[in-house]
Image (cartoon, helix red, strand yellow):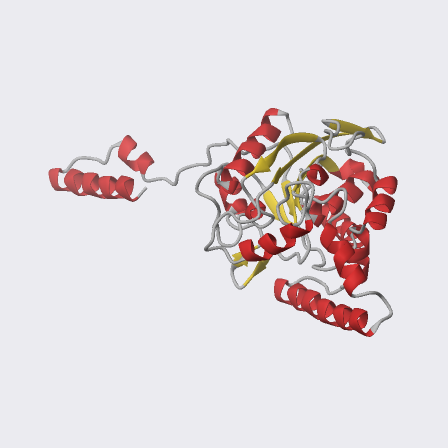
Length: 324
């Protein structure tokens, strides 16, 4: 782009010195480049965060560089404003209100493509189940649809109605409230509702209430689409199965530790490979951990597999081709 501008300036100076008009080609080349349209979906994309959700804090986005990448090639992208620490049902109600508000202010918006990370996948499943009229597609990334071992550990180590449990709730609530405040979101932390949801019993209850899109066989693939109350919704998922992918990334040490809780399957440090399955499984074994799936921290990821940004770019085009 800088080279084009220099060329135009040089052309203008030469034309002026010779008394010649500036050519149309030179003038047009000075105009800003237009989006290619590669990611221009029919319906806007709503990015739905996972646990400790925020949109942007201190200039760092939860979805690091992802919205900018998609918008640069034609997408309309929103980022959800939901509680950092709460149940998927509570967060889902917040998301429904936000989708309705956007539609009220943007009459041309009919539905949304929900792209969700971690707990955001369950939040989106709730939304599509109770308000399918708002949703064109749901894509989940590393979402623990069959629960997460860390939730059982936390509930066992910090049991409810004990000193340790109370301390855990106080600290976690404070962290969630701080994140909500820094991100400009309404406070409403409930850490016990969050951890209980992802325990073995909690996830079984959630899945019984909102089963749409889940595989019907162990570690199988879910349906590519569902019809809920007459509304067709396309379903996708992808996931990673590595915990340490870049030694300069501080999150690798966290996920390298939590990944030890998985004894029988590969995981991204929070979600097991089979637990991530939902709808059409695009791929479930990227060299990515739970943070890499959202291009964190600050874009650090393995140099030997797909760049996370390219996954979102390709998927937006997939949604475009599907008429979504």
